[in-house]
Length: 240
Image (cartoon, rainbow, N blue to C red; front, side, top):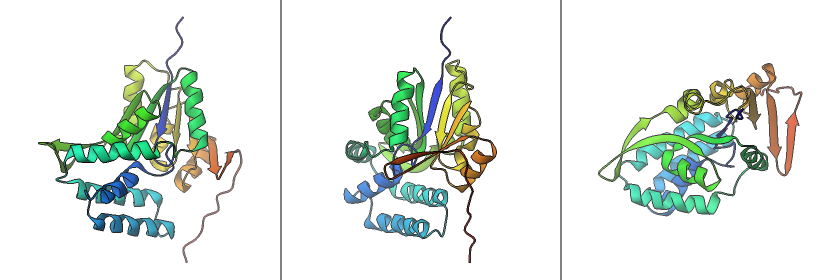
């Protein structure tokens, strides 16, 4: 009897990569003078708002994506692709130890490694291939006559990760009960709910609350220490 097919589905930004691909790409595009300096200022303003805890991380990333789409309009794909390749070469090893080691273990155990990210598909593809993933999904941006139009072709990767996982399970005849999924925010919950082994890694408040309620594995990595959290209290800071 053949072994059951198992999927290992990973969010990328903040789960494998210790930053966000779209943020690092945006900064690199400013350095390459493809994006205007104003783009960095816009991103920095949103970053400081999140750093000062005046907004959520998800709201910050959503804003950065909007800034990225605004400035990518009219840019040549070949120029952006070249910068994306440079970002991957320089930053592909900036990963969390827990997910890096988990990827190696699951790969050796025969899982199909799947990366899903709201970052642009062309940099998701390069990053996923560089770290050994089998399949990868990112946000598709329309290109016409070699240039970005500013239109988003597909939002599946950013807002419907669960559909991607369901479709993959059917296509590969995979057992979701034996599969693993790792995410860090509540937007990953629909995806995590589908598998038998969900892991909330460095979760934000929304995911942490859901994970605790549903007895999911919760893992935190701080500095050079990895914690598997079995019991925890959620201390919520009230706004003044």
